[in-house]
Length: 241
Image 1: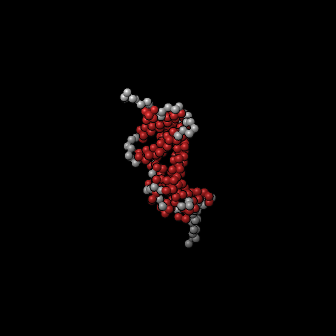
Image 2: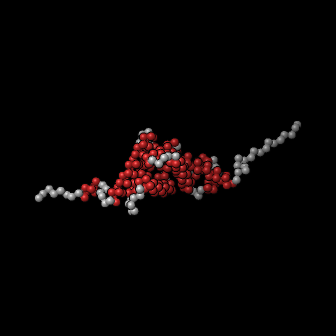
Image 3: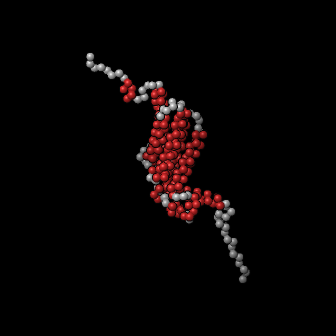
């Protein structure tokens, strides 16, 4: 009987891969698993055990990358925000300087981003409300967006006088209102086609920006800024002798 040779042992899939790259790969798998759970089943179902099972990793590898579950959830949120920002910037870089065209392109990029993968919208606009760590990061991100929108509006319409708050007020309305709008649209409470949503939001964004500029200009000139103030400054008619 001829001697038989044992088949060579198969090399592990990670053989030859540097340890740092293997750690990065495990971290990415945890992020992907948590994103899927958070975006489909919600933060309450996104546990360390569930994430590790979905990532097919031993739980000991979880703490190699994250201190706790909150750190993972915040990392998922941050990564989704970064992906959204990259998507919007890519679109804006290819858009001309016309304010209406740029505004519509930016809004369309955001709506398209959350519509093409509904898990993104849930991570960004829904699950952040229920988890304390996510909610803190959501608020921080919202404040940063308000400042960004305020600076952008100042560049488009001119910076308001020092101490004039209308730019910050308008930016807060836009950021908070758009977040609520996307939540309602994704949940089906506002049943309009995507293009109509983008067109209507664009018109309202531009109208608010123009109105904010007019309010600032009127206030700087000492004129009335609202109908109530204008009425208050009109002389009262005398009805008697």
